[in-house]
Image (cartoon, rainbow, N blue to C red; front, side, top):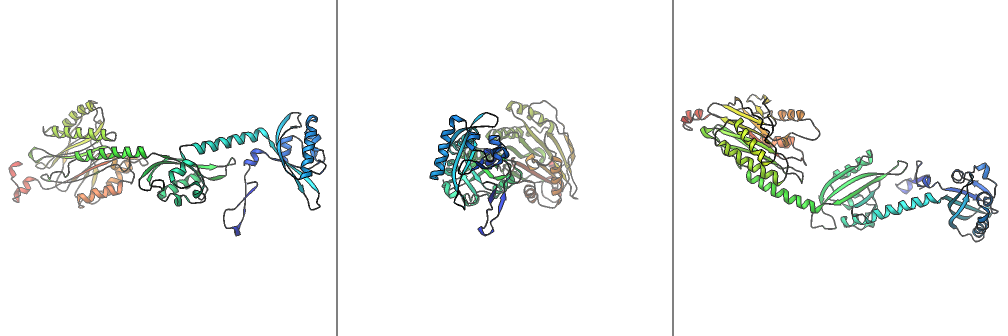
Length: 511
């Protein structure tokens, strides 16, 4: 663009913007030399001094042919000069020049005739080093071939996020001719894109930090009746001098992978939901609410589960567990562990013993899982609980105080052979026990202690219904696009069977 480029705005408010050093003309180091009609040097640019080695004081007034051309080429050059001056036609080509240091260099020339207001003729010569020019030409040709033949969709947008160019792959993906991209805003061409993508591009423009592999699903004019998926990356475009030119996008069509993952996700989710109790059975002296939420991210589905298991003597086992990993394998392993847990629960074992046996079973499944297993006895108003590497349950009291239970955490299930401990505490009418998997509280950008504090802050109303509490926790702590599923189980102690017998509700012999 030279030293300045026009301001992109209303023609009536035209302005100029200075260019920083390091642009293409600076890379080419184009020299300008003005000769009079007899071939004497009348003007000599600083770039000419760099290219030819002579200062302006040494060059001005000299015959250009005698200063720069070896004798063996002089006649040819003089004839070309005379032809340009006689016919007024420009000439471009390469010929060797003699540098001040005595070396000979091939220089790319463009010569043209000029006429001033006195009708006198002059000759303007523009010159650059041929090796540098050829290197730039090769680089441009290579870049053009890479862009045009790339199977990856490539687009370039200016700082207003209007298309400058697209390659054929991007043209095919968008279903819009390349010419119809140019000058249009990205949302005019791709209206399905989420607003976060424009925000991402503006962030890249502001910071220069690339944003990679942004996943999006939508429809374009190329296939308006079917969803497609793309992985899109953004990079800032900069001139050699650091001036920001715009943003480049690279798009990879990952529709086949997206559809395969979606199918796997549906299968895993169907399997997982078929294995979860729905709804949990009503239990004496206990109200229960539960939620299961799959991961919002497309490719994630895990092995979280909950269970409410009837035991002898009106006791109830409450279970929440999390199998590491995702997909059908994690869901299938979860089903096996849930079945094993129910079988062990029928033996009326202490919670620590149940986890001990599950640890051996998990070793045979070649997986790792966390689990919390609690047994509530309404006759004694006691809860007995054991934890295998799981996050601490919350105990909410009728007066509104709440606490994370300080329990021996144990090791995750996985055949480690480490013993587990059973802890007992009073669980009287009105008390609530909140069991959950890590997907409820863990995030990638906040420490777990802060998230557990947030969990306690939300549990501020012991009179709120259990279903409302479940929904509030999920709405407040879960974000759209979370990459982990959640199992949530809340139990509130009611009156014991003995209390209910006094009112004629049930037979008190069970206690």
